[in-house]
Amino acid sequence: MCGVLGIVGHEPVNQLLYDGLQMLQHRGQDAAGIVTAQGNMFHMHKGKGMVRDVFRTRNMRDLVGSVGIGHVRYPTAGNAGSSAEAQPFYVNSPFGIVLAHNGNLTNTDELYQNVCFTDLRHINTRSDSEVLLNVFARELELQVGNSTRLSLDNIFGAVSGLQQRIRGAYGVVALIAGYGLLAFRDAFGIRPLCLGKKQANGHTDYIVASESVAFPSLGFEYERDIAPGEAVFIDLDGRLHSRQCAAQTHLNPCLFEYVYFARPDSVIDGVSVYQARLNMGVALAEKVRRELPLDEIDVIMPIPDTSRPSAMELAQHLGKPYREGLFKNRYIGRTFIMPGQATRKKSVRQKLNPMAYEFAGKNVLLVDDSIVRGTTSREIVEMAREAGARKVYFASAAPEVRYPNVYGIDMPTREELIANGRTPQQVAEEIGADGVVFQDLADLEAVVRALNPAIEGFETSCFNGVYITGDVDESYLARLSEGKNSSSAAAFVRPSLIDHSVRVSDEDE
Image (tube, rainbow, N blue to C red):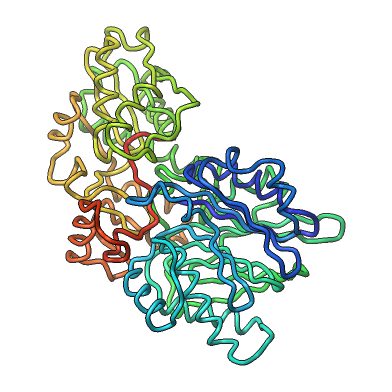
């Protein structure tokens, strides 16, 4: 779940981009990159690691210019160690383009064949983002023809052509040398992308980011979300232009953004993430009341941090004490992005420490945002029992995760998902809990839609197996599973090997 950022200002933007990427760091900790533009010249620095590790003073001094884009990346299956896949990516023709992408394309293999063997463009990595960049570059070439100048019609026409060729989910920011900043979003609005601006010294500066949380600390005000299928272009004079570039659009944001990925202080598609998580707690409380022996529960505890708002509201709604019994070591990285189950399992013990006083002799209801593999949940239940809990119940703010996500969240194959083919009681037995309650999907959708009735639907494939782009079927999922189980497979053989997807565990931030 990458984070993208773009700024058009009237003063140097290197520090703003650096600070903004730190605000988006939760979306990816594997690599970071910034490109600034000064006239027709790009200045780039990127590398593996967190933002604070990638950039030094000498790097920042070289990032001159009042326009720029940035990216934070998570590790992907099969290529997490490659520094070559740090973004933004660059092509020199036409005009010079750099691009950063959040999401995942579902027809990358087909696009790769077309780009390499029909368009005769070179792809140097296994990243679908580099494929996307070259598709856009080719569409821009077709629009421009023999002209040496670029028009707005050319730019928006290239995005329209791209929209017709690519499938999947994407939030994109790009710079075109000598012209300005382009941002666009997939026709279903699966991945988030929003626009902000500020007035300063008679100038209007613009910002585009994956989440609005990046705006306030940089002095920008949230303006609106970029609509599904919409492209926004901000020229070097600070003029904003926008156009709908997709033939058909639907607002179907990823429901997992509200459950887990987005920061609680963000607003995504008109919905406060924090308020959504509070309301999830109310809906979950009603199901807990129906399915668990409420009189036996002595205390309710969150598994920090994402589940905290839901746990607080759940406790209040049920009239039960709320306690912080698990304490977090802030210096351990996010568990879900750590490669390998053994590493994640070890990290849980290092990251979360139970306070025995809060557990001893009590029946505890633990609240988490979701249960994916079950490995982390099993460790936490075991830790609670070791700390003295008599009974341990578990509540998930999300429904059962039973299917892979192919739109930018690299959830495991169906075989690895603990809820796949199991009832809640069987899941409880697997993780060692006395009972497990999952949020109902209909309740979760209703909670988020109530905060913005304009949302037509949601991307919920990991919960119900419905893939809204219409191009993912059983054979695709079989290839996905096969690809993830074949560590020696060659690049671009299967869509699963070229996705840009977060690998998720049950642990939160």
